[in-house]
Image (tube, rainbow, N blue to C red):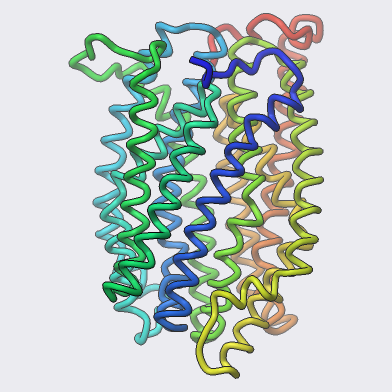
Amino acid sequence: MKSVKNMTSGSPLRILFSFALPLMVGNVFQQLYTMVDSMVVGKVLGLNALAAIGNGEWLNWLVLSVVQGFAQGFSIRLAQDFGANDMEQLKKTYVTSRRLSVLCAAAILCFAFAALRPILHLLHTPAEIFPITVTYLSVIFAGVPIVMAYNFGASVLRALGDSRTPLKAMIAASICNIILDLFFVIVFHWGVAGAAAATLIGQALSALICYFSLKKMEMIRISKWPHRLDMGIAGALLKLAMPFAFQNVIISVGGLVVQFVINGYGVLYIAGFTATNKLYGILEIAAISYGFALTTYVGQNYGAGRMKRIMKGVHTGALMGIATAVLISGVMFLFGKQIVGAFISGEPQDAAATVEIAYHYLCVMAAFLPVLYLLYIYRSSLQGLGDTILPMVSGGAELVMRILAILFLPRLIGNEGLFWAEVLAWAGADVVLVSGYYIKMAKISRRFGKQECFKGTGNPGGSPV
């Protein structure tokens, strides 16, 4: 298929950018419908509804990021099998990872509903927004199998070098979501449940588009599915995916602690942080896309044994990331206040105070955006090498830095300290990831010898991870 891309030859800059560009466009559409969700809720339903969605943001991310962690973890092995040109193993990996995805979705769904109310109580969710948050998250969590279906399908496609089909899926989902948002919230008056339902229907459409594209791929088409799960492959896949998922859990715990502290400052702070967090996705659009591109690029080249090419690609990705981060930061400094203002309504005095909180938070993050981009570049590169342990450790560093910052900085410098927790969390992760990547590459060099390891051919360690 033309959509499948082998990344083991050609210019790394051209390959990474051409692969990441459709993902960026897709992420723009994804963020567009996320922003429309928040704008419709904030403008039509008011500050309490916007604050309710924001209050559940980290719990929502906890559940959905575990889904993404398993899907992306499984795709690492698929990319390595594809890079090694082992089509028989690729099919076995695909079958096993697809079945594991179903089991994981069922387990995550049960956890989500069991944990919903207890965690919201632990966060000291204000009484006036508690029932709204429960309603919104209940609908979102009911769609966990849908989210898994999309994330698994998109991850498989990306592992095989296809970034265009996920783009088409995301555009379709975004258009569907925006139209349904307007109908469900404004016309049908379904409140936050309508916004959540619109999101799930859009994701279901994107999952179907990915599914039908996968059905056309001969390289993973199975004539007769085995009755039993291949436990050897399943164990290898879970070994890759579980640290990936646990890393997201660790990061989410830090976010929940931040939300707990923010809840103590009242609805205006919750709404202000919510407005900025909705722009977080805009800030990291290119970072996520470069990350996906590098995971696939490194995975395929590791499978093919092209270690010198990996180093060149990661260096190129880092430069691309820094340049893109500086550009996005400039846009946020110039137009950020107007953008966050689009999410906020209410009494003029309250709305103005909320906008100031949101813009201040946005400026702090924008000033240090290159730190976030390097986080994605090096974390994704390590994951492409099959190392999901160091990224998990980096999640621990994020957790420690985020909690220390949010608990102690406000005592030292007042409310200003609230805005620095996220940036310091990025910096803590970077220390682990950047140093970890170069240490790992040095170990590979010593183990296999420069001539063998860095000549660009041959498998550096036998079978891929």
